[in-house]
Image 1 (cartoon, rainbow, N blue to C red):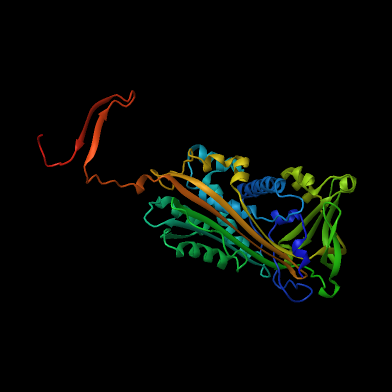
Image 2: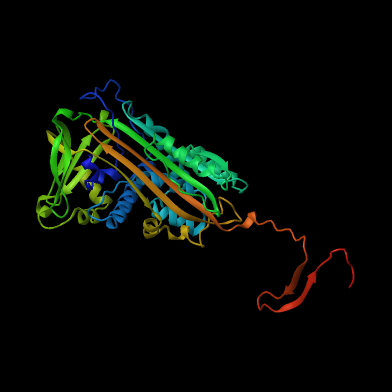
Length: 421
């Protein structure tokens, strides 16, 4: 019985850092230290903005998740999908994207260059880590899409672009199979169906797998109680290791950082500090008070140490519709009739129908495996260019004054060849 799958774990690191795992051996030997991620000043500014978005989205999701349910997501995956979508937005809709994703101080060219840097270079940082970042755009066959929009996302996000017959039954499977392939089977499905008014899906998929810098010894793994929010407990498999890690301890929070291979990625774990751990303050309350300034402060105070680390093994999946959360964060106009996606199609009336996010995480003695996928669905509220009327049957017609509605003339057309009554 896999009891640790039921354990309600609130590992904040799930939302900030990428995770990964391998399966054999006890220690990773850094034969190749990999490369460093080089960022320009505005790209570093966008990292700060992404972290701020991550924490805001995390807090929103956590506030509705319940204290007995697990939560795991990749706001970075959401950011990629929304970043692609923002290239089709204009006016106040684009402003909403900028404010929600916290890049209002940057140009679209700067933002696109940042995403291109991540897509290109993040997968190359560590030879012991497998990181796949994939983007795609699927649009309804026959729907007219601005070439400039497709080129921008293809160039900067390395997005695969394909027209599909959305009315064909295999269309859903085609998109789901793409996500399943790009996440190594961890996210088998992102869409349940394609509605009749859907014209486009912008999809991001991420898969990450790497080893701990110092692996836990499987021989030391044993069952122990894990205490829930109501002080009841469940029996979980705990792994133990004497490893190097970073830490910061304060009255408010205890922060621990466990590095992965070559110190390129890490898992950050945060628990309530000594002054509030016994005061009835829940982890959700701690999370609710967390913002980017607090996060940066904690990260800057981490110090190296060595000690015995004991933590549960766990694996679970998470999924959520992000419409409400993103609306709360300021993107509501993109889901409304007031949305302006004229850079996708200048005449069709488009809006976002749903943003679906799914994620998976598994932590064991070797390391961590994680995957996430985000789909932004675009629908046509007024079909616009899809309406190509042909008046080849008798019809009524009228001439009116538009401001008052006063009808000046009215008649019927039954035969266009007739020149008289």
